[in-house]
Image (tube, rainbow, N blue to C red):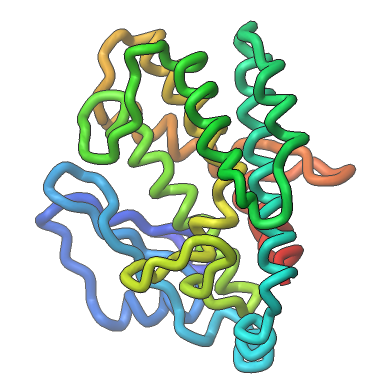
Length: 248
């Protein structure tokens, strides 16, 4: 047994799992994100508290909705630059060239009207995974491992956003009307290279790119990884709350 207050994300990945309504309610009251997985054990949906995550939810939500377009564009510019910086650092750590990404970083303007993010992605994936690699969310192998990692990061960021009173569906750049986590998708962008780096390491080491119990455990360990945030060291999941607070 474990106290619900000690949970951050609850992942339900076996079709035989049953969970009571009272357990779900207690998780929501403690701001625990619940991930539901499909038959391939990949996350397909997430449950978050509607208002109990923050005592001033209504006030924060009104301010979020009233955010002006110029501010949204400036925030997106910062996110894209941070993502490209992390991509460059990822390549540097494994001894690959990142000069092109450094130049693209400096070209990102407010709102990224030139879609520098996509240009950087083309350079980044070819360098990291090889020229034959194609990022395809429907593909198996490395792509499925990336999907799993991104889903975990997405849940972590969505939980942190709710904890600050922000609504995860009101995005800065992502605006798909069928996506309930647009803001989470925005804010998690700089964290994607952390997943990329680990997946590449696992694939290189094992030579077998598929989702296994061991792979899941390694990806989940990212949440407790010690990171530097400002002048402090803390677990990645805790740093997500500081990151979410800066978005307000």
